[in-house]
Image 1 (cartoon, rainbow, N blue to C red):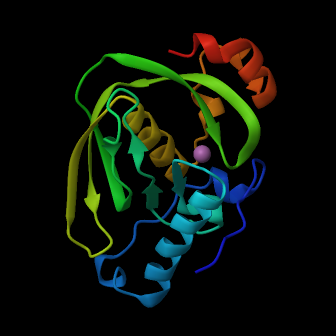
Image 2 (image 1 turned 30 degrees about the vertical axis):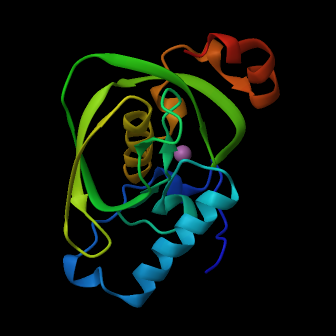
Length: 179
Ligand code: NI
């Protein structure tokens, strides 16, 4: 396994629409190794999600990390997953907003409105159907990562740029209001 170099904002790969992965290619050793390396890279940089274009592969693949449930000790809101050719369906109009960060936009955070409850469909790393309802913070993570596959970053989704902040200032001025 390897820790991969992460593309930073300004690199054209982050603005490209990524290509679908052919189902016949899912078993390829190269793709499986990429998935492992993406998990390792995400963990190394303490990310909760990572999309393939962020590691210079313009293909429709994302990974998400285990997401602990802040209200239930030892329980998870979402489990570590790799999703190939993900598709989102919105299951509500209701929005939530969190301060998002991105490994491709280091040190910045900004508040982004997202849909609270979604359905995520695609294929898992064995090529089997992946179909899950996702709510709350994990739904935010999924929408953020699928945006990367369409050349969109969280800054594009911000409706109030006055909430854009460096991480140190976030801790100082915003963290207490981030509900
Ligand atoms: Ni990101």
